[in-house]
Image 1 (cartoon, rainbow over the protein chains, first blue to last red):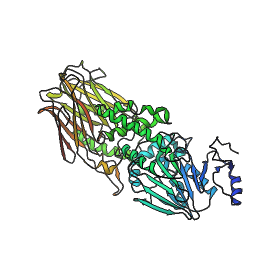
Image 2 (cartoon, each protein chain N blue to C red):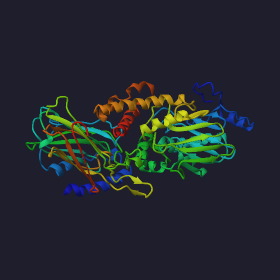
Image 3 (cartoon, one colour):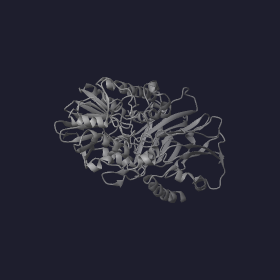
Image 4 (cartoon, chains in turn cyan, orange):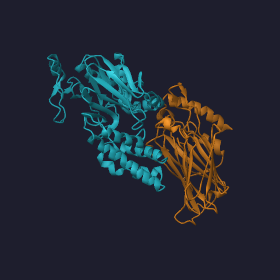
Length: 326
Length: 271
């Protein structure tokens, strides 16, 4: 049986797929189990963070042939009638592994595939679920965002993932677009989907499971992995203020641990974005350039995040281009 | 004019390239600079890297749709400047901008010009400076970047469309007011659409619409006239120097490819 890395105390004994199936036969599906498929090293690991809420934690990496685009969190919620998937990882192959993990837990139909926003590490696994004929659900601006970037996203991912891991990736845009909010009934539980103002991107969607009071924030919340700004820094900071007022039993970030607690979960990201905004505003006031800002702004945060060197300069550029119009 | 014909052809060709994933490898063999050089400057000699002009641009672009670029003419260059042409060899339209300098461009200190550009592919970026004596001087750098032309830089197209044409001009007085070289900034709210972004609602490409001309004057005298293309990033942004005069307020007049005209003015105290 495959060994697993040390994990938080709340996540109890790892079990094999066979062990799990035996347990399932006994109808003893208790929460807080980590399912470790024993057959293949490449299969995705999932944890049940609350009854019927399963989360896979993505790696803190850039996409590569080795990780097959498995670098964001992906979740699924199991109701008495149906399953909803929330984000599908960054390749069709990883998406299929996620699907296998779902099938190891439940035979209920996968009726909804929800994308929290347009980024490839959250949507490129969509193709793996086509056979389930689900509704693909997203913010009403997701299709536009993805369409205008499709060629670039495909080209970059083909290069970074390599041919093998890139195989089967398709751009699949929502068949069910959310204007403001939407309720999805899974049987015994309802998911409430809400579009958000431009923040991480212009098509961020949050999901709340009413049965367990779990709030899926997508990439509105980064933990450990440096946040990436592809929307509006002022919009994001304002939204984080609002989210800080919300109550939820737990939140699931787009990148980070499987589950976190409000409002503490938001603090590091707020600190990071605030540091950039403050530094950039000061530099603009002093007549400094975007180039200057990319060498100075927000570097006090460097040691606090993984992948800082991969994304920080881009974040500062985006912030500068936005804030110089204030 | 050969450039215009070529422009149409190459825009179409590279549009196809954008859509069907042109790879750096596929284009690496072609060196289009000799052709570009011939079209733009004919048989005139160009002094490469002779220190008359310096190009600053990151070797690796973090965001290919927003790459900061600065051209400096060191203070030891004392001649008046005639023109400056910027190229990105592998872009759909390799000629980024041509500045023709006027009497108010100034001299007697370091002169510079900065903007932000889109870079479609791993490419040489070039700055060719023409000085008063008619000689040409070039600085170039190879930049690793990809996807700038197809990349939609607008993070939120709905808000980006608001205030199109809004233009801000800032004049930055130097530490010593009698310094002969002053600097200024022009910011234009404009998508600078390159015609390569798909409108999902219509399945058509968003038509190209970009700033094609900008005239900067100080007290009625020309600082420079710029002709530009969509290689300039969304919300075009320029920092440049000019010569101190009796009246250091700047008038900026901009025309885009839809023949829309925008104008703004600013003095040393701000707007």
